[in-house]
Length: 495
Image 1: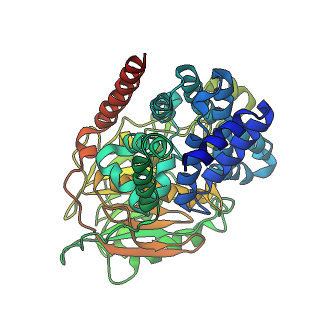
Image 2 (image 1 turned 45 degrees about the horizontal axis):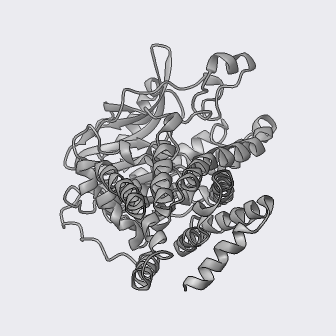
């Protein structure tokens, strides 16, 4: 095993800079196949092991950084292929931005990995790559409002690979994944085989069934009207989509909680009293969570409204983590001059963020934490500063993300949040994929892309608060400190 790996490292080191970057780019693209639509996590794990087998930390610092950038660019180009889809909804207006969005997004995210590989080349250490790469992924989740979409570990939400996130969260699990990949190419042969077996096993082993809900559990319904984005605001189609939501809410047997997707109300919230009353009546007196837009002192907010059995608005949650360039424009003072307000915001001149995370208390069910679309990708913002939820409700409009991999990748983020918190998730998506997810991240009821209807399930049982739910990223930071110290002490011992 050692000889072929050493040969691979030598061969790559002997290539010209351009050919070496191409090889790393192809390897990164292969790693991206772990995400939907291919969705084979073993491909991502194998690509990661192969990267460590090339020992990029033995390259000169600049060459190592270029190798990391090339690997990241290939990986993100495949993973984030869907990023062009929002610009094609109104192709005549926004289509020209699509290639720039893909190139800038993938190339920009790859800079985080380039920095990590550069540090490894400077320190000449595989442990330095493990630590620096984990830090780079943590930074990617936080810098410039953060974009942790497409983490390697989230390819494993359907298998045992991601179950460790209940303890370590996505960043701690990422660090462990990197350590295991390093162990497959370093150290005694017995360690290498154990690490390789553990990686292979967790990448393919299915998750055991979750605990069955109690017999008297509340019934949760997620509604999917399948309103295509290019037709959603067509005056002739608005009544059609609204009636689909009404019929889904009224279906027998009745549910205890009915969830409509993001911006499901076809007018301002303050103007929708009659529709809210009708929805409450037709749902048989269920509580409803309905996505809407509303004005507040001249600001526009992306809102989820809790509508009671009588049609009254009982509580509001305003999205607080907005999509840059989608819901607001950084440096809006400049873009306003060119009437560029963001894709989703359109002529509304951008949304205003809400005050922060919150829970909505649903009678007979308990505290529900709402997440609106993009907010579901931020693990460190779920369950923080609020009462521990009994359910996480995700409402989204994935019509922006096309029909290939984007919606499925977004769904995987919701599954990841369920595993991390040990709390079930109900996800209502405008065009799909709507789903009810148990506390182990497994889908127990769903609707596929491009259909209208609803999915019901008894509220899955919650687990006791996971270590990650209690301690957040502190376990990751502790493990990271240990790895850094191990690297420093190892160099001192060798000296």
